[in-house]
Image 1: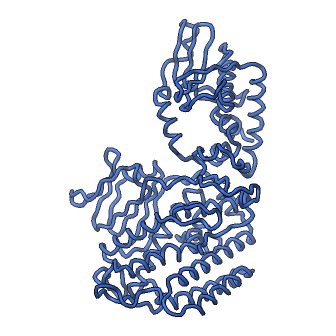
Image 2: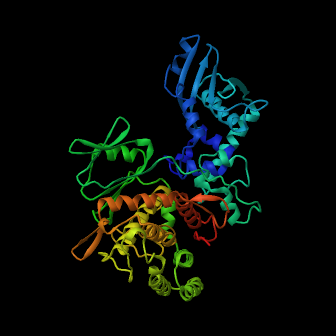
Image 3: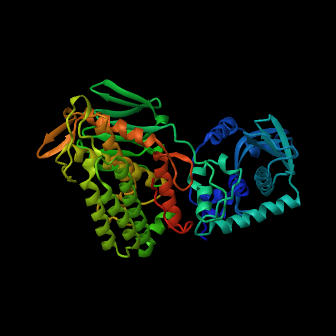
Length: 549
């Protein structure tokens, strides 16, 4: 352990997290993961005053009374550090006060709060101050509780610090708590997936609770107007063209930004997006994903290291399951929406699912996937209405073609696949993956191979489903497409229509086939990326694709 290793100095808040849940401590302290929920936001509001530094602790010997806020102390000998919300002194001794948003228990303080203020007392003593007890202010009940810090609590704090260093030095996080009432209120529940992990490890026979957080309130922002300019002003994203305001959205309502064609994004806007972990995706005017701009990568270094050092066997097993998921979902979509006799192809796809599961070489798996795709797209036309309403044109599909797509259906498929890749690229970056290091698609310059891997199981469920829906519902007409240089692309208005349909599909909830709770496709993508991460880190024995029946 090097001199500047952060494990040498453990913050008091992390001691609190460790007592609450060792896995939470590891995810926050080692993997540097963070998420905000209502409890975190309320806690920040409770600390809004005491987090503003005020007073000076060094003034104590010269003054009979002191009130210092947001005091930072650390000790190399203890290996501990803390930011103390409030330090009060009466000329003889000092009292640290910690502010909590909740209510106190029937007696005393909560165990995690007890050890946290215990750390604060030890640090004050180490800096030469007399300190025998601490106080915890519970905002929810508007009352102060006191904690006497004697030999027993001192020993407990030092023992916990030693345990934490052992856990922090481990290659993987501790396993989740089993059916704990702590999990639903935890801000990292959507990253930890405790019930889902325990179910797959057979550690719990209880059905997983629906404690995956609801979909976030913020949503993607799409800018499709040629010549638009994207800036920020007073906490809002401002989209203008020739000084005319096209759109104004609060920054807190934006999850990602996608620009199409000739759109400029200011440096100030990019800086603000990076600070808020808002990725920016750049598309060509025709809808090809050209690249992305993000801030510094997620701090989950161990995950990226495992990606690089993963064995060929690991990659092969994950690739097999992804292809299985794609073929299963293609079969389901065709069986549900096919008009006419598609039974033969549906049966052939079922056989190819089994063949994919038995594949041992990547070349063999590629051949099976290619055969399945050829069969599936040979019947894609059977899912489109032969007679659209109100005299709308018939959109025919004779086979898959691209770069450039030569007909409207292929133009729609290519565009929706680009949108899907964009979303999975953002999810993978958020989890901490290197999205260019794939397990199935070959890594190439500028190709997000892992995003394409994870997209396989979602192509039928999301992208293909959107194409079938907008065509069968008559949401597009021939006027929504342009033919140029032998290729077909969407007009700006047609693109906006597809974007609305795509976002509706992501918001649609589906019953999870394994965990049985309702979850949106937007959230499913995040869950699957975290399942893949858990498999890569050795927490789960296998990667299980998301399939519908």
